[in-house]
Figure 1 (cartoon, rainbow, N blue to C red):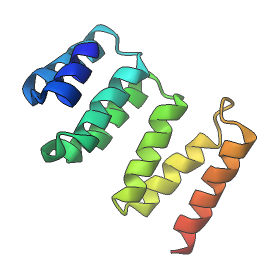
Figure 2: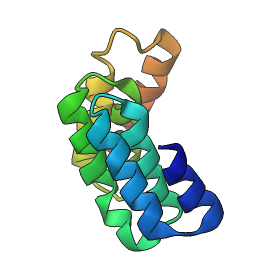
Figure 3: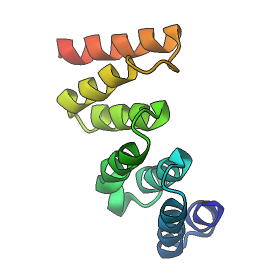
Length: 118
């Protein structure tokens, strides 16, 4: 994971970064940070693979189904991609997670309302 960050965000070696992130996920498939790292790398740096962001996050949710950070990143990814239906779906799932605070729930409810109104 650390090598993925080093290669991807600092050294610009995308192939090594991707391989490192994927190896980290393979070695520890329940570490949500590893999925978030790879998804963030695709989203922010390796733009040619931007369309894989949701695949990575969905893969993470298969192994860590109630991780609020994976759900939140996926909801915002779909919102930014204009996929209202999936954005609402994942914002709604966030409302069911006990770790999500009341103020966070309010934000997600507002997101759902805004997406539903459009």
